[in-house]
Structures are given as C-alpha cells and as structure tokens.
Amino acid sequence: MVSLGRARAVGLVGLEGTIVDVEAQVAPGLPSFRIVGLPDASLGEARERVRAALQSTGVQLPDRRITVNLSPASVPKSGAGFDLSIAVAVVATGSMPGRDSARRTVHIAELGLDGRLHPVRGVLPMVARAVRAGHPRVVVSGGNAAEAALVPGAEVVAADHLAEVLASYGLTFEPTGEPPASEPPAVVEEGVDPPDLRDVVGQPEARFALEVAAAGGHHVVMIGPPGAGKTMLACRLPSILPDLSDEDAVAVTSIHSIAGTFTPTHGLIRRPPFEAPHHTASPVAIIGGGSGVPRPGAVSRAHGGTLFLDEAPEFPPSVLQTLRQPLESGQVVLHRAHAAARYPARFQLVMAANPCPCGAGVRCECPAGTRRRYLARLSGPLLDRVDIRMEVRRVTRAMALLGSGGETSAEVAARVAAARLRQETRFAPMPWSLNSAAPGRWLREGLSAGVRRELEKLVHAGVLTMRGLDRVLRLSWTLADLAGEDRPDLPHVGMAYTLRTGGSDATAV
Ligand SMILES: Nc1ncnc2c1ncn2[C@@H]1O[C@H](COP(=O)(O)OP(=O)(O)OP(=O)(O)O)[C@@H](O)[C@H]1O
Ligand SMILES: [Mg+2]
Ligand SMILES: [Zn+2]
Image 1 (cartoon, helix red, strand yellow):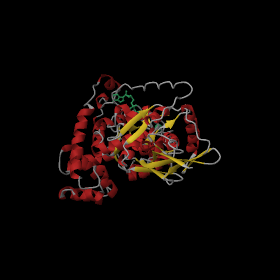
Image 2 (tube, protein in one colour):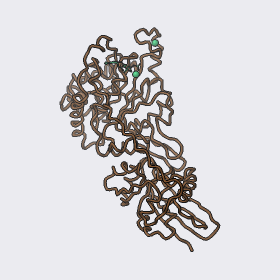
Image 3 (cartoon, protein in one colour):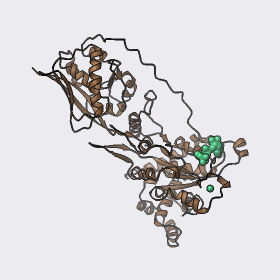
C-alpha cells in the first residue's frame, strides 16, 4: 500500500518565488529515505536534518521506502527553508488529523537536529509569493515571524519546535532529550541618528552639488585631498533623498531579507540604503553571487539608495567594469547552472578619489602624468554615466573647529522633494522619472529656442561634445526643477556646465 503526504514550500531565485509542492510517499521496500526534484548539496543535508529532527520529536519513521518529491522539478531549489515542509509531508503520510490543512499551508523553516525551527533568509519575498499565489497561511520559525507579518494578508503561524507544528495538525509528540532552550531575545539596536548635513562646516559648492545630485538622481564623482570631507559628504546623501515608494520599500526590504541585512522589528525599509563596499571587497561581495542561491551584492543592497565607492581608483578594474550592467539596466543577472537569478540594482553612484595615489594632498609633488593616470582608472563606461564632478577642498582647521554647520538635511530634503515632484509630474507619461534617466532627445526638445541656439554655438565651437551636451542638459533640467522653473534658462545651463566639470578642465576626467 502506498500512502502520500503533502505540504507546501516556496523556492526563491533572485526575488522571484515559486510555490513548491512537497509530496512524500511511503511504499513497500527496503527502508530508505530519498529526496528528489533537483536537490543541490544543501538538500542532501536537509535529509539528515529532517531525519534527526523527526527522531528528536519522537516521530517513528516507517520501516519502508520513503521518497520525497519537490516539484516543479525545473525550479532550482536551494537552502534550508524546505526542511519543515519535508518533515510535515513525511508525517502526513501516516494518519494525521490536520492533513488537509497541512497540504494547503506553506512551511518555511530550517530544522535543527533537535527538532527546533530556525529562521531562514528571504522570508519576506517568500511569504509575499505565497500570499499572491492564494496561500496566505504560512508557518515560520519564531525568529521569522515579525518579518513574515510585514506581508499584508499573510496568516502567520509562528512555532519554535516541530512538535508545535505537528500539534497544530492534531498530533501530540513528546520531544526526546533536553527541552529546547528558548532563543535569546534579539538584540534591539539603539536608534542611531543618521548622519546630517548640519555637521558639515562650509563647503557651499559641495553641498549644492550634493543637493542637485539628490534632486535629479545624478551620479557623482568627488575629487579632493585626504581629509577634505569627501566621505563625510557622501554619507549624507541618503539624508536628503525622499522616502522610498511603497513598491520600492518592498523590493529593497526583500533584497535585504535575502542578504540577511535588515531588522524586521523595524518594519519595511523606508529610507534609501547606503552601501559603501571597501576596495578590497571580493567581486561577489560587490556584484552578488556565491554558491547555492546567489546572494545579492552591494550593488543590489544599494538599490533605491546610494552606492559609495570610496577611493574609487583603488577598486580592481574588473570590479569597476562589472558595474556597467547595473548602471545600464538597473539590475544584475547572476548566472547559475540551472537558472539566472535577477536582483534589482538601481542605485545612485558616488565615487570619491584623491587627485593622486600618493595621498599627500597639497604637498603632492607627483608629475602631472601620474595624477592623470590615477584618475584615468575611472575612465570610460563609468565616468560616462557620471553627471557631476565635485572638487572638494579642505576647510581650514580653524574653520572646522570654530565654524558652525550649514542647513540641516531636512531643510535641503524639502527642496529635493519639491524638485522630484516636478519631475514626477512632468515625466508621468514617460517610462523614466528622473532627469538623470531622461534620453538626450527629450532633454533637447523641451528647450526654449534661445537656449537651443546658444548651445548649438557651443557645440559648433567645440566647447561641448554631443555627449557632454546631454549631460549638461540633464543637470540644467534639475537646476530648473530646483528653482521651480518650467524649463532651463541660460543661467541654469552655465551652472550645469560648472557642475559637470567641477569648475576645471572638462576633459581632465
Ligand atoms: N567641512 C567639514 N566640516 C566638518 N568636519 C569636517 C569637514 N571636512 C572634514 N571634516 C572632518 O575631517 C574628517 C575627515 O573627513 P573625511 O573622512 O570625510 O575626508 P575624506 O575627504 O574622505 O578623506 P580621505 O581622502 O582621507 O578619505 C571628518 O571625519 C570630519 O570630522
Ligand atoms: Mg574618505
Ligand atoms: Zn602625489
């Protein structure tokens, strides 16, 4: 006689979840326990964990042939999150009062050898998928309950031990061995104030450039000697960006859920993230990847926010090259043997660089060629996408000690929000929403005849290339938006030209 047990789980590839049907079958034959359906190495381990967890819970495995099938087979399955569904399906092959309920329920948890449920990564996108697929009842570990509950419409059942889950299906077991010690309460981080622009003394040009960058979503490169405040300024960019939209908040939080870099008790991530990978970080850490389910890298954790490359010329050229794809398409595709995982990666790029590898600042005596070559490491596809070049000069020591900070981030953020609203309204019918993403043709067509004539002169005179022209125009539109004007005028264009070149030779970087 063959008996079947069923439960549901969710497989995740990138941010995309698939409902996985877990079916356990007990058939006559030599005692064995197999899992099929494209299992990778971690599913092999799942077998051992599930077997041990069932034993610790007091479940007697039938002395027959047990086969567990995860379908659809075409979906790559990885990670420990299938453990619980496999255990429930196996138990459901016997007489279990809550069989039908178990079959309709999505189970997402790793099992410990002692039968305890452990949290897994990516619960938010998994539960979201389950709810969308019409399976709102989900069982998760206590450690994942707060995260699962962030999904509207989810009916979250939290449990700490397999025995509890089975009890909810009408089966009573006495776990053997030590009663599980309760998990230590999660450490709640103290709310640290995010860095604020009011701390920055002086630097009016740099502050303004940062405001323009925030308003139009423009990428920035900052060049200046050590201690000039480049890092300080970059860290404050998120503080003047608007909150994430609801849709972006879900995507950003899902990415950080898979990356294991968010605190669910704080709710969805609503503020633009800030990621600053070190130049020694591995390509996988920056772009994403790794064995099994590819993890999102810094470029995806920065989605909706800022990717800051401090000392950008020190990054390996290969890593800088890999940034092309996300800069062009707003996502990364990580290829794996059986599938490609996609993660969103639409970020605002901020690069900082010393003018020279010696780092001596004003005392630098390196030949001009050395300095040029150093910054030329950033050349090509990356700098092509950078609209703003900021020269950051050191404030004097006396000023840093005695001077008072400027406007607060909140004051600047209000102007940024207004400029973004103008763009949203203007671009409502278009597939883009920021000046930095507007195509060249659009930027040129909306100009007044007078401005167009002046720009044509500059291009004819060789002062501006066509590519340079488009960049100046993107910034001009943002300056007009900040000023509350309907279209850029000549002064905006002049100021844009200065922002684009950092007030220095346009061809230097
Ligand atoms: N405009 C400023 N207002 C207040 N403090 C400043 C300012 N500029 C620099 N500082 C102080 O100097 C410190 C160094 O600045 P920061 O690390 O941002 O410089 P940097 O340009 O990134 O230098 P490096 O090239 O060495 O990375 C800051 O932590 C800050 O305390
Ligand atoms: Mg720095
Ligand atoms: Zn030097």
